[in-house]
Image (cartoon, rainbow, N blue to C red; front, side, top):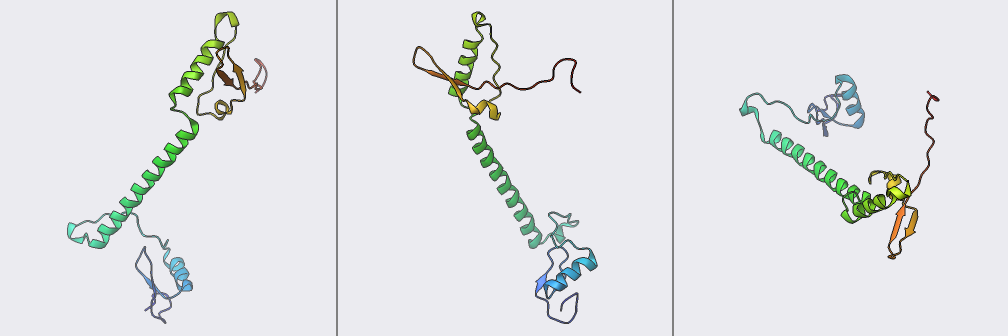
Length: 153
């Protein structure tokens, strides 16, 4: 029997409190009357070991499966993002170091500051120089508006 209207046979069971209802109107009434969220508890303490049932074991196992799935999904996204960022590519790193050393020679009187590889400005690479050896070097030079000393807030 429905726990809200007590007129029809119950079709649905609340995952949070196990009350049975017959329709969506009765489900809404049940949630309002009892302050129930309608969501089952993710974990709960089971005092005596004898009270630990197969249903509780399955619920806990389901939670562990969900956690494992979330960790796996996060690892896949991290690997994909690192691949897109090209953070761990040694050849890319060597080229950046070679370019920085070439630009920072004392006779050039320049200072080249490279942005970390994970930043978008480091991935734009729109400028290039072709060396005598035929190799190309690319870089971005971006001018920004900084605060002048003594001015600004």
